[in-house]
Length: 465
Image (cartoon, rainbow, N blue to C red):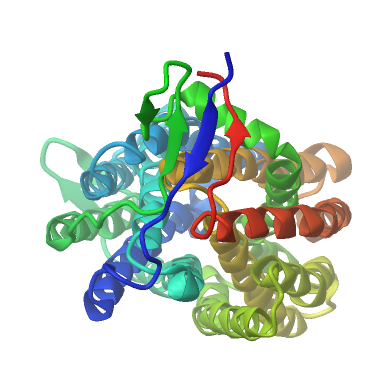
């Protein structure tokens, strides 16, 4: 028998935590997101020395940067999302930060490809805990009117993390490369890239301690299900959650696939741009990391803030799909054209200039796409839906850098052809991405209307008990 499903919601404008404290929590979570990308992306700056010291190919190093990390990052996100919808999100985040920081440091102790692969898997395990729990936590700290602003601010952590990784990591690499080898008792001599992993991994443990100052907010917007025997429950099974999402599969499928292609572009650039500048235009790692880092650190937050401002203006004008409309605009105007053209520039200086719209567009689209999802997901499903979202976009998005490596190794058979491979993969992905995002808009509007009606009238849907 199919029970009915209804939802009631507390007053949208009362009972939320103090705004000052709420923004304090967002700031801590944003710093955690920054550090996650610092620990995740630092490997991209050390592709060349790692390839040399471990004697591995572009395809193998792309597996270290993406498959090793993404394998457990994506898979474990699903059960972690389920746990975050039921248990302490603060505790889950603190545990995740601790694990990924320790495993980043362990990357510095790796002596071969297999050991480094396993350490990168550990980084993915820890980072899988952050986004599902953090986005759900933020959503319960802010009413719908200001929730989008807080969620897009949190996503600024991507640009900040990559920017810090490029600037700080590049200079750190230059410093340790010129310093004498580091001999550690019981471990032996550490190469420069190994020392970098240790130096960037351990300080993040302070964020795990700061999570102790974060309080769990009241969970709002919870679905109530009437079971076949007449009892009312707010505890949804995995089957009921999947039934709810399955009834709205057009909304979620087009959103996930459209954002997956955007993720391909972002991962391609974060991973391959430093090596592209080295191979194509003869730049050094400290030179490109400083230039790209400054651009990412400034243009990325600008993209996040601008996208939030545009979405707010569209919302005030009555556009129910304001966040996703803003997302599509950022992809079509900034991210996609520049990501295809940047590798084709005749000089490194011109390529660096085009990295500005790439960085603006990447941050713009990432922030609004993730925030839009939180506006249509019921409370008990927020972390699980977020985990499913990151599962899909990362499984597909992580194929991008490996595709570039495969095209370079087996298509062109020439390391110097990296820039052509990057442009080709980004171009093909872009066509699919814009198609899915355009198809998504009408479905998203329907889901927003449903979500806005939760607080005004009971809604019903069928789900398997």
